Image 1 (cartoon, helix red, strand yellow):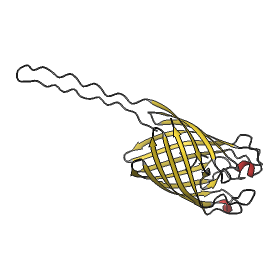
Image 2: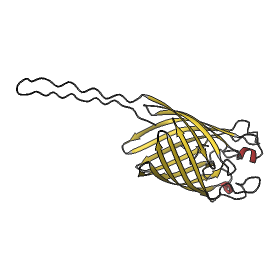
Image 3: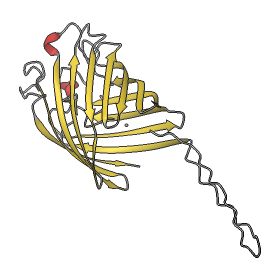
Image 4: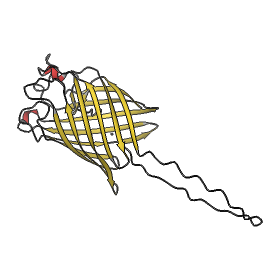
Length: 258
C-alpha cells in the first residue's frame, strides 16, 4: 500500500523557441544576433526515493505495528503522460495476521493529463506481499482514477481481486478527498478524508482522516508531520497485544528524492 503519508505523485515536456529580434541603427542597420533557443525539457525522467516514518499508516491503519518503517522506490515518467513505478516498505501486519511476510512491494503504472483546468490520473496498482502465507492471499490489485481542480483532488480506487486478505472482498472500494495548500517557503498543508468499503464485510469498513504539514528543504530533502486517525473497529484492527492500529496519533517522516 503506498503511503497516504505516502503516497503518492510527473511531468509534461515541451519545447519553447525564442523569436529573434532584429534591430538597426539609423547609420549602420546592423542586425542583432539571434537569441539562442531555450533548452528542451527532457522527454522522460527517472527518480528514486528513500524514506523513514515513525509509523507506516495506509488509509489510516498502521502497517508497521505502530512502529517505525523504512521505504524506498523508483519512478519513471514520460512526456506523453505515461508513468510506471515501484515502492517497497517494511511492514508488520502480515505477521500479526498469522502470515510470514515483512515486506510490501508495490508496482504501478498509469497516465496523467489535463482537460482544461482539470488534471486527471488513471492507472493500476499491485500490492505484493512476498511469502505472506495467509489463508486468503494479501496480494491485491486496484484500478484507480483521480481528478484535480486547483488544490482539490478526488480519487477512487477499486479492487479487482480480494482486498488485503479479506475473503470474498473483490470489488471493494476506497474514496479519497484531499487538498494541498501551498503556504510558501517550501511549506504545505494537506487535509484528507477517506472511506474504505469492504465487499461483504460491513464491519470492516471505516473512515479515516489526516492533516499533514510538509516542508521541502530543497536538494531532494523533505519532512512531514501528520495527525492521523480512523473510526475503524478496535476489535478488527488491532495488534496481537490488543493495540488499536487505527487510533489517532502523530506520524512524522523524512524523505530524500534523487
